[in-house]
Length: 366
Image: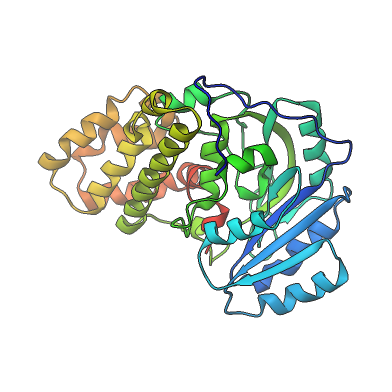
């Protein structure tokens, strides 16, 4: 991670982009032989031609490399770097270390880009000189490439300089799309990479949870990629378990620690200490309460967690879906089996969307 010391919370200064900047496409692949060919075809179909695609095969046990090699031979802009399995952060670090673009775009090995994706992203960066983080909307597709819904995944996209609000919100940032819709200037990437390789999953979360501390977000409302949900990625689960919630709570804690270290390195102790704890976000207490339900903790022992949840200042805004809000507020009188039956029935839609855009994002699809 590059050193940058400043005492004031402010966007970093970005140099002017050249007329046709090189775009580095970072692809971490693990056992996606079924999809990687279609993914690379979408790269080759780009209307913008000044790009390089660096693929790190992270120790795949299928024939991914055999599928990728013909593309490398076909187009010199595509590079393949095999390595022993080290996890997503390790693979992304390898791709970034071997990249040289002024713009960096993530592409999950099972997702697909629209032909004008790179052109639109480059234009967005050029039209917003202060913006170092471009995001856009996506469609969700299934394992066969069919649309799951005819409407875009995101109803709203994050926009502008949000560092102060992220500090107050326990480091959480909402309205961020999946990894294949994340694009950053190399000046921002230099502050984030190399990422902590202990993040064998969720490494893309580090990018979208750190970048807003140093740059403005530029939203592109058009749908420029397809986000694949299928049986072998974690975002496609249809019900919750205690283990999933424990993992999510642990991931949130570790990401928060990374944010604090990042802020300390960039701004110093005072700004780092202004980052509120994870409990500043209502979803933290939601997860703790639902976990208590799954673990069968007696009502008398979970009473305080429930109180902290329903009295949280963000409660009404965070849980705008009325059936879920009603269950969380008034469901304490229900038995665990009945409560969890209702919860899994009414929460899937809103909850899966939140997980897809907050924590269990495309690079956790392993």
